[in-house]
Image 1 (cartoon, rainbow, N blue to C red):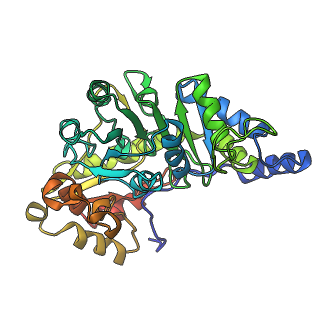
Image 2: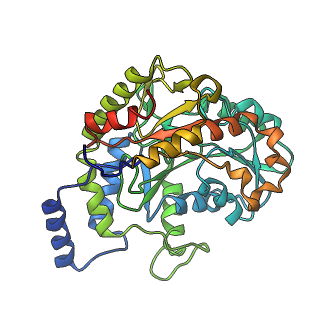
Length: 369
């Protein structure tokens, strides 16, 4: 048995020779950024693959979240969101001068609780920012009903939801805007990168202007934009990765099913099963550790794994609402968020990557079973 460290998630990498060939073509063209050929090709190819009409590429996954509020002209007030996410979700609210309002999650999915969301709406509420946690779709129908009733915008953080569909339809079509992350650890990646999905030609143009300093053409600035364009090198990398993403997802599914079969009858260990009608992408494999039933805490298991060179991840821990920059907010009080707190204290994501061998998986399982 080798001693290499297993990480929580990693992607397949494109063929080095193919990538080198593409780099040479980019170099020969002398066009490495600003809406070049590869950028345009990746947008078009991703739109077709994802089943959406309008997508705009960004240089990372945080910038589309930041830009979404500008695009929807949300400039003051409150945004209802989840504390159970990566901290960039709430940071995007803060950077726009808005106040985050945390509500609890549904313990069955890890996603924002729609009923708690409606209870939190005030005259200052402007938008809802849910997260498709671990790629499990939110209750988008109920959230849309709430937003329509109260005249609110919806921005979905879909960083985990690349390629996820409900009844054959992309969940990126829900809400006013969905944002994606193409970070190196994601199912599909451009090393660093991201994207925004919108629903009209006009909004696509607004987004493209905003991510290019607000320039609409060479001499016209239409808004105080930002620089968040994806360069040609990462776009080329993405085009190569997109060729193998279906194989990567299929391989991840095999590994997840082996995990499930091995852990199904382990007392004190629970996990998310597939949801009927959902095309999952198997981006993570989180398990929930019940300390009393399992006989040890999640953190004890986490440390045992680390001692054996296996890097799981307590994802998401701590809660965003626990960080000092947000913990003073009334909505961050622990008694308001019991389900989110319990999940944050109990979940660990096991290593999962397409090249993972059965021997790798046995190393992980031997820490648990």
